[in-house]
Length: 212
Image (cartoon, rainbow, N blue to C red; front, top):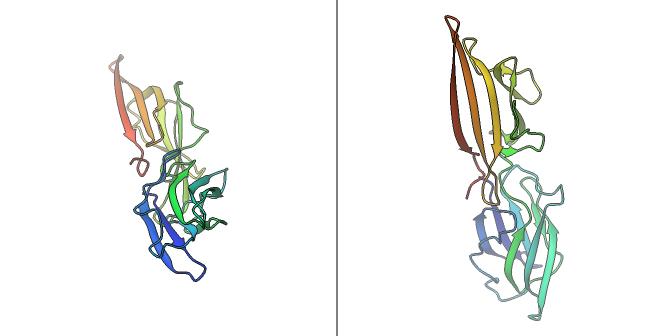
């Protein structure tokens, strides 16, 4: 699960945690355990990304709203943190009322824009990370009546047996601000003694690491 840690840091590197292990969701303010540092001084706000996912690209930002050194209203929008690193405000904040990302956690198991939804045959592509934090691209698709899985562009491996034919495979994207889910509708045909039997299947899967 992707988490962020928010720390207020003074010039002397005296730290005071405002939040720990909070999960970013687009447009939703992070839950803060405190709004100001224990020393009552103004600090830079440092946000640490505790995952191997890079949130510094693609226009990902965090909006910090609070007060400046003299108690005046102050805001700053900063670029999201890179993989296992930090991002820091340039302004000093006496207090932080909210920190709001424009992105959602879950680069582990996220739906790629190249997926084909609500069409037959569907094509589902996911961006995943392995145990070492390396990005892994996974694809599910139909070819000549079989379902295949392919990883990182390698040759696909059949998931369905030779004894059946996949006549329909449709994916539906049910993602929202808080989670990502995919609904799967599948029709399987079996020819036995020249008699074709069609069996429908349907399921919904919440992608790992994408829920709150």
